[in-house]
Length: 251
Image (tube, rainbow, N blue to C red; front, side):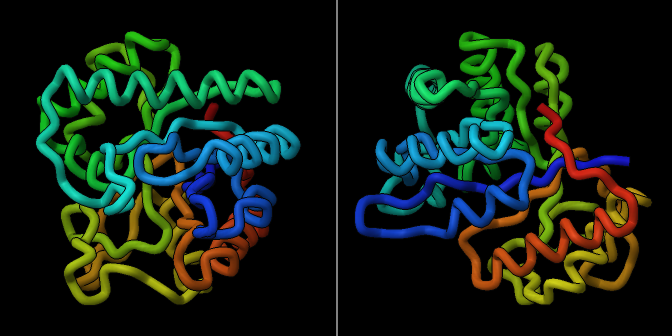
C-alpha cells in the first residue's frame, strides 16, 4: 500500500516567515507551492522549488483568490473571466519558475477559501477546471475527498486526487467539521498518526460524534503552518512506514 503526503509550502512573504519548508520537505512527498496570490514572494517561492527539486519532492501549484491580506481565506465572488485568468496566471508563473530549477508543476491544489468554495460551487469549480485544462489537461487536481468537485473534474477529463486532512475532524457524513466548531482541529500527534493509518488501511475515520465515517483518499495533507506541524507530520509518516505503507508522490 502507498499514500501521498502533501503540505502547503512557499508561503513566507518578505520578513514574515511561515512554517519550515526545508524540514517539511524531508517528510512529505508532494509540495503545494504558493503562487503569490495568497502568500509567497518570488525569492522564497524559488527557494522552495529548489529545495523540492533537491529532495525529489513533486511540485503542485497552490492557487488562490487574490487575497494577500486575508491569506486566501476570505470568500470571494469572482467573475468567471477573472477567475479563469487568475488561475492560469498562477500556474503559468509557478511553472516558469519551476522550469528554471529543473523541475515541473505536476498538479494543482487550490488554497483556502477557493478550495472550500469549489468543492461544492459548480460555477467556480468549472472555472478552475477550465483554467487547468487550458494550461495542461495532464495536470492532476487535488480535491476534497467526497466532494462534488471530484465528479465534475473527472467528467471534464482531469485526473483527480482525493485528499484527506490529517489534523481535521470529520462529520459522520465524511465532510470536514467547520473550523468555527469546537474540536475541528486536532493537536495530538500520536492520535492523528493513528487516524491516518486507519484511513489508509480501512478508508474510514472516527467522526467527531464517535461514529465511523468513510473517507477514501489518495493524498493526506499535513499542514506546515500550525503549532507542532513538524512533530505531527513526522508522527504520521513514521506510523505509516512502520506499518508497511509506502509514502510516495501520486504525481
